[in-house]
Image 1: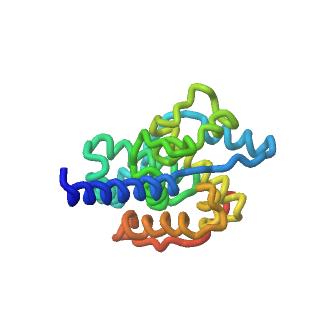
Image 2 (image 1 turned 180 degrees about the vertical axis):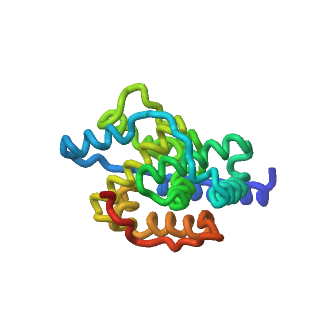
Image 3 (image 1 turned 90 degrees about the vertical axis):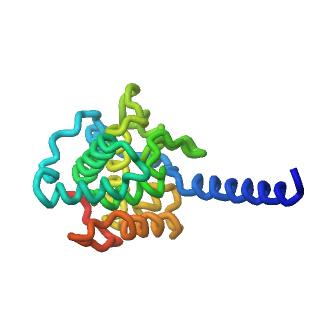
Length: 216
């Protein structure tokens, strides 16, 4: 192996290492914060692992158009069509159930895990939405698997909803809490950028906002 080849390999390894560090920096790292008994009970009820019910929105022409468009955009990351439909149905259901925009949640998943179901961060956050295992111990039940699609999305969406309520609807600050980087602009900016550039449904374009009203 000549010197030129070694230099190329060296540069490739450095670039790969830098990419891995960057990806790790974007992975979820929620920090445990003491909660009142009522908040803990409400969150525990919200993450109870019940099946996704029928998503009626996706039956009408607008919903079918949304599903078809999002499925096409996701096809390179998730080649199996049935897996994509199941994933998008679950994203839509869990996001709207928690009072979140499904397209924003897709942006968050892109940044957190790159749509990798079994992603694990350097701080042990797991799955699509990079949920920290302490949440299961705090508000869930031992049999809940954070690599299971519905469980992961239900936890992730409800955790973000909790942070939105704490931050009185300020999405920018809630995203910072979700990532464990409150007060730093990089992570919220990445999520909002991914949302706007990759997941906004063009026929019904919505602009990413810095605030979502607290759920009543």
